[in-house]
Image (tube, rainbow, N blue to C red):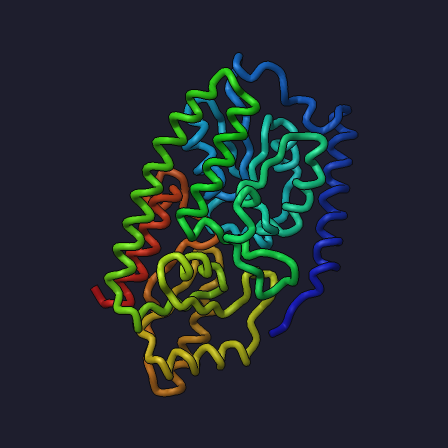
Length: 322
């Protein structure tokens, strides 16, 4: 597999982003975060979130007390996302910034960590017990950041958001606690739904093959053998050998379907499909899954719960030919 020099990649992007931040601070004539603060009980809390999944949980816990801005829209890959000047301005004006963490946002995550002394930043996934995290197969001493695919782990992220709002806006603490209790109950129901749907697939057919290795937490939680063409981060590209190895596995096991992802080019899976066909076996593209990004706001799959339900229904339907 061909890989980029991750240290160089991170350094270049960090330098560019820090230069951008510095230029904006000079232009504004004030330190970062100065526009935020004050007595939050007297106004709406301004929250910025990186991904759609993070923004959705923040909105559910914050409710009407919080105005949430998401930086990354539908189809955006957080591993490759580059912050804009507008993003930096929104970060400066926020009362609190929520991001996934665990290097999901790549270089942008490092920038957010370095902004911690200027503005309140919260990595929602880094409140999870490390013993429950999966190690990265790509980067040493790091964890797989895709925790939202285990609904029980995402509940921990919701609790971290709740505790943050209670701390920074104590006058509305009961509102946040009530919202969290309701939402955690909805996530309990969602976890049960995914388990029930997964169990409807015979054990030998529970093989999930996608464009990149984003579904390992899903596989562990719901009993699927997960194989991704690319690694955990889409910053590296799959090589011809990876395509052939995966094609051989699919043909040998006679896997019925493989899946594309909304934030990864479809050509990666189409290459696997063609390689399988060359071996005399036909594998279908079972549908599109949402992995690193949700759908547009206002759509059924534009919420975390809707996204998870869509994914499991698509997987089960393709593997069992419902």
